[in-house]
Structures are given as structure tokens and as C-alpha cells.
Length: 220
Image 1 (cartoon, rainbow, N blue to C red):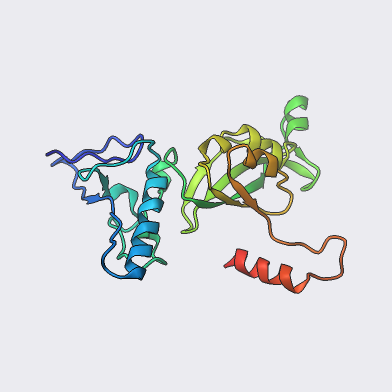
Image 2: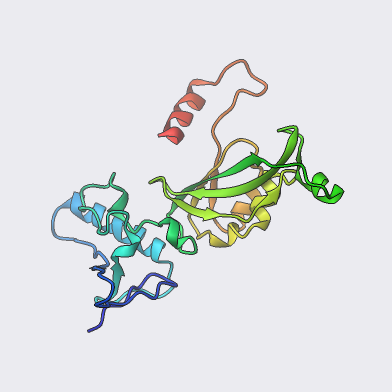
């Protein structure tokens, strides 16, 4: 049987000209103890979320090595390893996201445009300069999973997020970590996803013990 990668939109097949390995999608191991059962069930669900297909895999469905940073999946008990589940690479930006992700607006200075319209569109009141902005999506393992087109510095983080195509990548149950200023909870909720924002001290002298602990967990 010829191996074909089962990740959505991936067309990789077993080919002698390109050396790739293909790995079977993990099954739930029910009779090897409670820990093994729990980890294997979580791992399978994480893989399927990354594969981003509506239909369930068969016993012959496999994932090619291109979707792993190290070229192969990590051991079941090494959940901290980035290859515990399929991981996006820079060369596969169109693929699915992991169940948790962080988005950040990156803004950089640019030369002052000659066009008055372009000058107005790129003026950033925050930077006090003409800038361009990108929305970057980052997986928990640190790999970049989404890069938007360039926007003028005048555009808000909320506007860019809602109009750059990022939201269409979300799956039900996704968790999105954002910095303060991303007022997009309603937009995220439309896709049955959840937004998490660190606590901040606006309007109060210091964070409460609960807010401190929650912020510590988010940072971790």
C-alpha cells in the first residue's frame, strides 16, 4: 500500500526521490493502566485536531515526517516534547492550528510614504511614526503557525484580527492567548473558541492573589 499523508491539504506520498517517514495515528490504549489510557486518549484527540478532517481515520491513515520538528513523534510519556503531536512548520503555514495558540500584533517602522493616503493609513499614534503591522500566530511549542498580510499602522489589533483570515482557522474548543488590547472575545466566541488575557492593574494598586496565580499559570 502506498503511504499518503492524511493531514488536510498535505499531498505528500511515499516517494523514492524524497525520503519521508509515515507514522500511524495513535490509538487509545485501554488495557495498559490508567495513565497510559489517559495520555493516549489525549494524544489521539490532539493529533486529530491538528489533522483537521471531519471524517475519522482508518487504521491505515498516517502522518508524514514533514509535520514534526524532529521528523518523528515523541514518546507517549514525553508530553513536554514539541513532537508529542503534529507540529506546524514555517513551510506549512496553511495547515491547521494546535488546540492552544497565542496571537500577537508585530509592528515595525517604515519609511514615510510619499502618498498622503498611504501616509495616513500607516501612521501609528502609539509609535508616533509610520509603521506596518502583522498578526502572528504562535503554537505552544514556539513555531509560527500564521502570518497575516501587512496592514498599515493605523489599523487596530482588533480590526486586523477580524479581517486577516485568522478567525477562519479556529476550531471549536481552541484556546487563544492574547495580550491586553485585543478586544476580540465576541469574535472568538463566534467560532466556539475561548480567549485568555493576562490580568492587569488598570484601576487598582496591585493584582489580587487570584489574579497573580492565574497570570502565573498563563505565562507557564
